[in-house]
Amino acid sequence: MVIDLKQCVEILKENDNFLVLSHEHPDGDTLGSAFALMSALKKLGKKRAFMCSDEMSKDFSYMYEGIENDDIGENPFVVAVDVADTHLLGDLAEKYGDKINLCIDHHMSNAYFAEKLLLENRAAACEIVFEVIKALGVEIDEYIANCLYTGISTDTGCFRYQNTNSKTFRSVADLVEIGVNTKMINKLMFETKTKSFLELELLARKTLEYHFDEKCAIITITQAMYEESGSNEHECYPITALPRQIEGVLVGAVIKEKQSGAYGISVRTEGDIDASEICARLGGGGHAGAAGCESKDDYETTKNKILESIRLSLGS
Image (cartoon, rainbow, N blue to C red; front, side):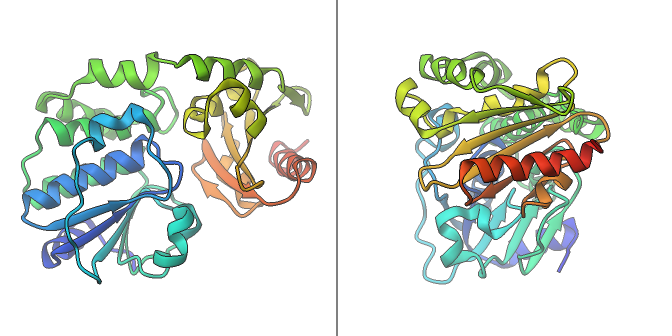
């Protein structure tokens, strides 16, 4: 059932024990949404706990360090943030996939898996959570503002992606007035690279392939590359934007080998080409300019499938 902001606020006020879930391979938006909401619920006197199937990057430690889960009992009210489908919960999907009471999301490809869904076409889930917290009447302190700014800035590529709009800038302006530490967050998110990441990027660049009259570029990241570079899956997110940055490329894709042997595929597009449409053909989804999917086939089959989907969208 799709609900509006007012109904969402009423639901949060009516319940007392919350379990907040983020998606696997957590990024700034899912974590910013989760920890901002966790803090707001705490201010309301609610008990809350957080769970994610994967380890969080140390870059986000300013959000999660010192945060302890409350005792929420056996039957908490389960909230998923920035989660478009249950399989994105990773290892938590089996236990909680059919127990999501509320989902707050900005992916228009949402699978409507939750009992209640607050869904808005915004640049980031943190934009929606910001509205929810304000409607709850909770004072937004610097910590909450930092969490929300992290989600908005990272999901918009520091306000460079096509999903950035006037609402985005208005939200950020309000957060800056509250006292966001933009210097710290921007340096961590957009200006700092580890040596291991640079080694991974060098290896990844060597796999670059062009297709369809160079309108498409594909990069591959393997587990062997993680081992050789000393990097890991948490660090590879910035590489997802790399193929699309090449002059003349309309569709950029990054194929990432997982430890399980499956492949995660990130797609970024330019102009009118819909990334979510490309990924939907392989069971995934996302936004018009950025989307993802997963394949359990071998590498060559996986690459051929995503190339065929890209070809259809390019009309090649």
